Amino acid sequence: MLTAVVCFVVVFALILLAVSVSMKYFDARRKSQVAGMLHTASGENVVSVSNLLKEIESGKPSALKRLLSSMQFSKHADEMIQQAGLSWSSSRLLTSMVLMMVPGLGLGLLVPFLFNGPTTAIALALVFGSVPYLVVRAKRKKRLNTLEEQFPESLDFLARSMRAGHAFSISLEMLGEEMDDPLGQEFRALFNEQNLGAPIDIALRNFVLRVPLLDVRFFTSSVLLQKQTGGNLSEILSRLAYIIRERFRLKGQVRACSAHGRITASILTLMPIATMLGLLLVAPGYLQGMANDSDGKYMIGGTIVAQLLGNFFIKKIINIKV
Image (tube, rainbow, N blue to C red; front, side):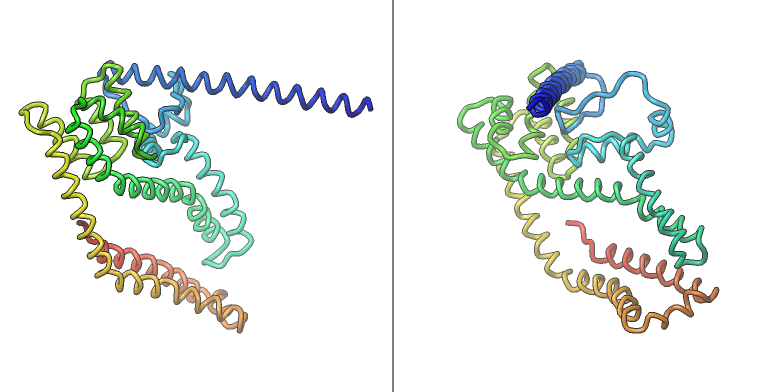
């Protein structure tokens, strides 16, 4: 009985501690959000974040942060992470990449299938270490594709709202509340920056940084041009939404025409790998002689490089910009 009471008290205390820490944590995030938006509203040139709840790092950068800044990796990584909708930092991304290199080094030393153990370890370490970076790039690409699909609908919403008599800022607020994320999140950030006093050109510039799409550039150019010269902004946005949808239709036709090339690239890439795995299952010792021979190791390395180059150039050929 006493043990059960003690366990209950301990668990209850841990729950209270967790709730208290969580409340303080989210309160600090809200304060950081307001501080960041006020900093942007002052008109200073800062890199905006797509996630309004992202914490602002301390004023004194760490040694790793200074090193990343000197290599220009920090700016690129921060922008890519923000566009992916993640709450990471460049130092956290680099740390995860370094940690992922460790199993690659160990596996390469245990299974030296390339020229020798150190060469295999370095190659696998680079492959494993690039996984976090590739994950962030994949999330960024997926999020930007979603934003691109949502954008014409948002332009139609703005046009209808302005035809109903609402101001542009009110239309942005309504769009941020009604539109699904992630585009709704970005328009809420745009409205909050403008609502806190940031000039419209600075708020739109930060919007372009967060959403680096060609359609968004057309939108911001149209809004700023209409602000300077006048005109019917709702009609401009409606025509822009129509043009974007037509471009989507043309892009679909291009993808259908280039489907044969994509299938060919996939088959040519996977066929050697499938053949090698099949030989290892059917005749395990068939490829062992090539792996043990010095010239055979060079042939294996050359084959891997040729496969990567061939896949790269095929992707470049079939990747038609619309």
